[in-house]
Image 1 (cartoon, rainbow, N blue to C red):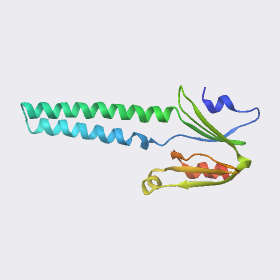
Image 2: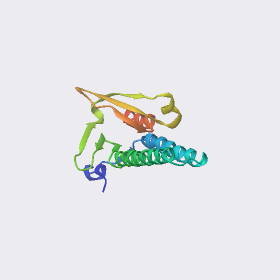
Image 3: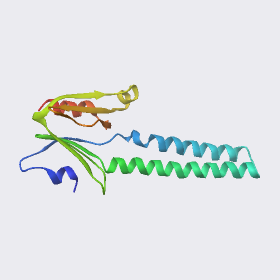
Length: 155
C-alpha cells in the first residue's frame, strides 16, 4: 500500500498524483552509452595488448557506474510520492528513513513552478509551495508540474 493511500482521512480523495520525472535516469543512461561506445571503439579498432585491456576495464567500470546510477534513479523514483487530495498536498520520500511533508490546501498562498527549457520540452520541473507561515521545500524534477499546480490552485 502506498504511503498516500495509508494516510488518507475518511472522506478524503486523491485528486492528482505524480512522480519524479524519468529524467532521473539520464545520467545513468548517458554513462551506459559512453561505456558501450568505448567498448565498441576498442573492438572496431582491433586493439590488442595493454591498450585493449585498459579500454575494456574502463568500459566495465563505466558500465558498473551506469548500473549504480540507474539503480539510484529507480530507487529515488520508487520511494517518492507526490499527491494532491481534496484537502492537502502530500510529499513523501525515503524507504527506511522516511521524510514527509503535508500542507493543507487552505494554507497555500502560492505555487511556483520553475522549468528549464528541457523541463518544458520533456514535461518536468521544480515546484515550490508557499503557505501561511511556512514554505514546502522545493519538490525537484516533478513530472507534470503545471498540472500539479493547477490541482492545488483549483481547490
